[in-house]
Image 1: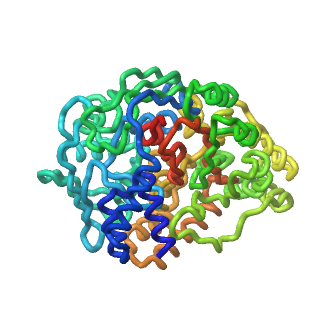
Image 2 (image 1 turned 135 degrees about the vertical axis):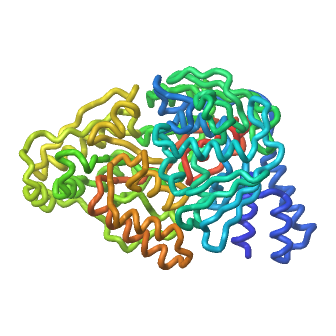
Length: 528
């Protein structure tokens, strides 16, 4: 019981569990109401939110091509921007639970095929209009249009019918999916007036802050949404994102107090930063991963023997040690690790094997011309160094891999999902279905390896509706092995989220769902 109580106190401290829920659960455990109240009061007083002021984040991952259209958010700055002004139907808590937001209730039919979401009353958009069930349906419909280029396309394509019925949204799926609320927590699916059909780039949502100034690739300034429905979120009067892609400049801005928090602390300088009396380094293990992606529909990567040669020609442990400084773990060429429920830890770890890589390369019949891997400093921290390490280990196996340096600005528009072989990263998702649906389902718009496998798709659909967890885990295991052995994903390492935070920031908590408290640090933290 002690461990459970500690977990509940932690959730209360982080603001994830309300006083009412804490009291109900502790008294159900046999804790007296007086003791429970004292415990909650002690937690609340220890970290009481302060209101007012301006919080600034120095964020890597912004470009001059960025947009306020949440459908297009792909790199850290757009994701954090959308998470600051946007609000989804529901959110995912750090411990893997659901936090109901625009929807206050979610329920499903026994087969998880028909879902009903009750829309919270009194939620306002930044323009003063009330959020309705019709706005929710329109938002989901906009993301079903392939022309929207939405990163949530693979999620919403599984919805056969969407209806607004008073204050309820009823979604009928093509097949049952017990994880649907987790999928709808995707940051692309911020609810917009009329779904964003009128102007998806307007930046009007129902989140805790509204956009005042938007300078793509430079900065975004937000002011508090006065009529936001949740008083426990949005403590500062104003928050600001400063785009600082250079590691040295970003770190200097944190140390000088120009910004209060930064993402993507370079592992090479994390120890040095820890020595600063005004700064804390926050390290959170999660689902994020650094990758090299091959388009399996384009030569020479349409040859699985060549793909396997490259997968065996990368030294994963060397990358974890030299690129991450040990702040992460080895990957195994599928995007799931032990942070996910139903992870299969019996799948053999792929190792560097120069001899086997050479054999597969010879078997591929490749003509010996250079194989070009594109990378930019901002693809992920240490991406260029990682690409060069990959080239060296592959060259040692007789594979003619060469690195082409690309500029950061425009990388996520002109290189990622365009060029056939490049460095990239994924922040991970809340559940396996969401990760696979977003990036590896044949019809997903963000299928950045162009992987299309009927057996994989069938297993994914079957796993969605499977209520037997043992069978569901077996389906996910098969999917992992298909992708690992046939896909275009080379996943050498899962990265920890390493961030720098000044001591005057209160309310910080670890969230394995994504960097900077899953993109919500600006709205969940306060100035002490």
